[in-house]
Length: 116
Image 1: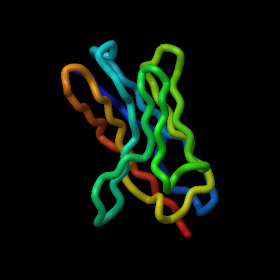
Image 2: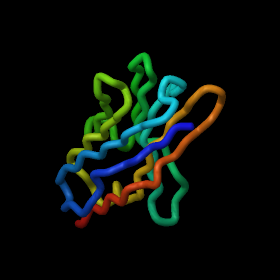
Image 3: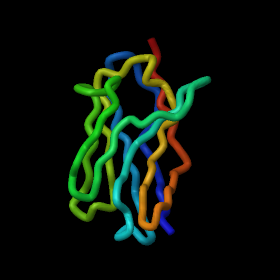
Image 4: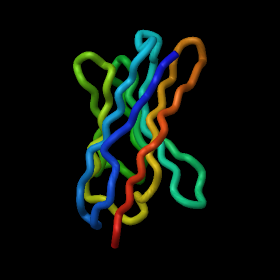
């Protein structure tokens, strides 16, 4: 079992920045990929950014150049630095772990609201 706890959401004005954190605990040695997803009101959940244990990073086109995913040395915490935020970035952001064997875990989510 993997537990994920997000933090760092909040209210920010357009053009502002926020940094989200996700702490993983439990059987973290089974994690293959840690990722950030988001769900905006009335929309499906979408991938924002992901990082594999080998360090391969993927970003959604909508956030390239503005968001950056990173992790700590212990590989049990991932971050999402969000810069130049836009109102369309308003969503609940979820941390996700893809673990062996073919198991997905989700955090409780953290709200990010960008005011225009």
